[in-house]
Length: 323
Image 1 (cartoon, rainbow, N blue to C red):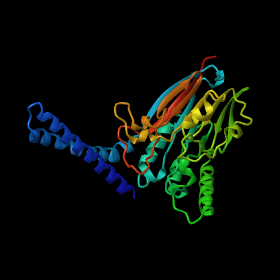
Image 2: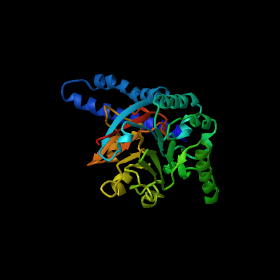
Image 3: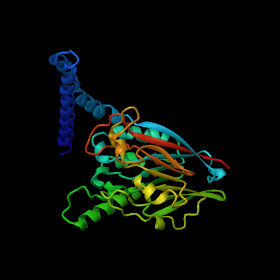
Image 4: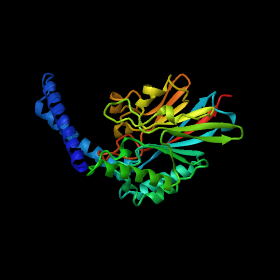
């Protein structure tokens, strides 16, 4: 199915280029050029989608990149000045099937950053917990002084697999939760944890999936997740960036929200992505006053196998205190 989808998309792109070539050749006739010469010169462009797809599949999706971001806040306790937070998102482990070495390189890069904490902002899998088979040992090697924290994304609820019953789907979801905890991860299901330095603390808050897009189900409860979160600085892990405007910015005292979900549609050209036509916040750092949102472009892929311009991302966020 996924391979068929890729071929269909490539054929559509090729058809679009062919139509464009015909239009350009037709217009060129009005300026004295011959239709045949212009049309034949443009035919080589039909190869571009196929070359880009092969490059994005073989090369670019295997080359993760560390994006370094610094965020300053007057709310951050002085003892947390310089705190190193690594964010990863949207691994979609099915896309790492047969590519264990690529995932191992990701883990090695993360550990080399010597993070204080690692956070996963959802979509560990695409269809179900079995995608961890053969890869769980690699992910267990992730190391951070204050641990690994994770939340669920829309794919983690196993809604994209055909089940014989809802009970079977629910059991698969519980297995995914258990396997994350078996790896030593702190899976936050509408709850929070405190990280303490002396008399000061920050809170890491995790919600189940909350979306401002009607195409994706909402399971999360931010009010419940924030109960007892008494850190001077609050970090929210929420998979879908549309949650930021739906219930976070100017509606809570969250200092920093971390999200994923968009993948930048796995395609970027000179800093522009078609995902910007759908999402107001689709990749990178955004702010409203003293509140920040960072949207990670993800490490894996869904359906479309390639990454073209949108290199798999590991985000290193260094927190700085203005105090």
